[in-house]
Image 1 (cartoon, rainbow, N blue to C red):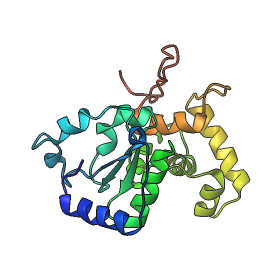
Image 2 (spheres, one colour):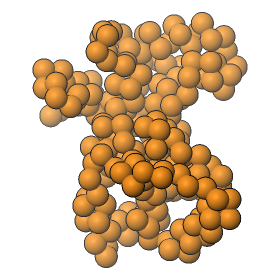
Image 3 (cartoon, rainbow, N blue to C red):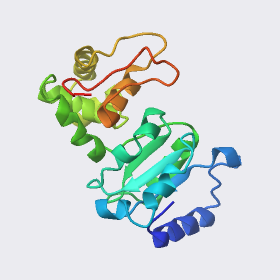
Length: 208
């Protein structure tokens, strides 16, 4: 699903040259989305309608520039954990291939530029360090990776993560993954769980 057919053609050639078959099972084929590079372009030519026509359960990798607010266009897919977002300004063919493989395996990754602005909404309840950790957490990094990125001890990151969960009201429990809930809260403003209407979270301070 692409606005840039030249890029997709080049990617297809690279996949074919390396003999890569991402998902032999047709039901698990991931979809690469290359949207127009401007907000105006998103609403021209029926592109948005084509995106909406794709079933939510189809694994999706969106390749877009950070200035494009694609996270809000695919909020339902992000909540379902079926979409990843890759920064088109730094991506390579090998990175795209890796992301598609992760999509087939049901793993979700969001590049940091698409979470940086979103974490600003929590500045009133989180410290600057906690906002920075939340940004990296929402981008899919482990505590160890966050510690290495911020040049701090992993135990420090663990403390920040616990405080983030507490301040965002994300309760612990065997039926939930709080890292996933925090990511959903950053990207979509809620932590609604499919099939569990009793648990609803909203961004603190946001008027429904």
